[in-house]
Length: 120
Image 1 (tube, rainbow, N blue to C red):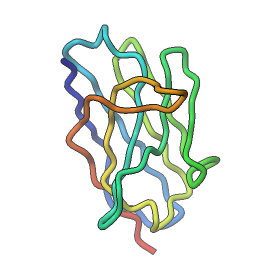
Image 2 (image 1 turned 135 degrees about the vertical axis):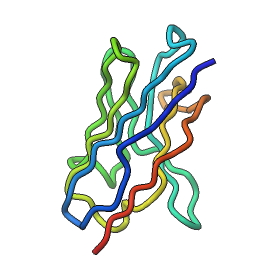
Image 3 (image 1 turned 30 degrees about the horizontal axis):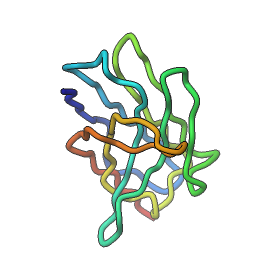
Image 4 (image 1 turned 180 degrees about the vertical axis):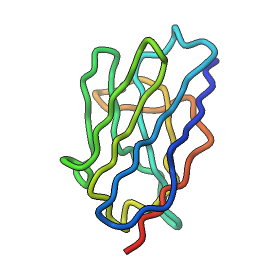
């Protein structure tokens, strides 16, 4: 079993930046792909970005060019660098480990989430 702990959320003005981190512990040898989801109030959770074991990445269209996902396999940590933040990026961000089904990432273990609030 893998435990995930996110950090780095907070309050930022529109146009600002934040960097989220997610540290994995436990059965880290089983980790293949990792990803970040977010859930805004009243909305469904959506996949924001994912990264596989060799560093290939995918992004939802709304964050392309602004967000960058990366991972440090030696530290079992995944990051989400968020630049040019917009109020619509406000959400609870969740880290996940999982795999791919027909090319799409699906999380199977989740962190507790970290709040990101972007003020206008």
